[in-house]
Length: 95
Image 1: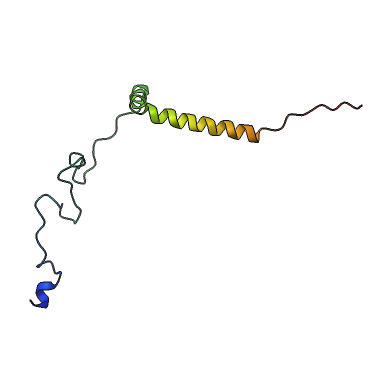
Image 2: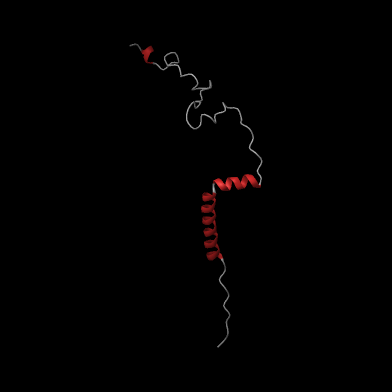
């Protein structure tokens, strides 16, 4: 075996399977959960406008996360208010 056979020149590398690269060196998913989302580098359609219905639908999908973050945020605010609130003034009456 010669040194030319062991080199990593492009002539000695195997050809990639068809559909696995887009020509500029980036790998393109051909199977799995991301294959359907691949757009080949072109931008997709713009996101729909944000309105009350879309927020409610998102809340229906992620209500658990929203509840957890709301409880953690409320508890943090309560602790901060407890320690940062000024002490109440105590009246003094002479003896």
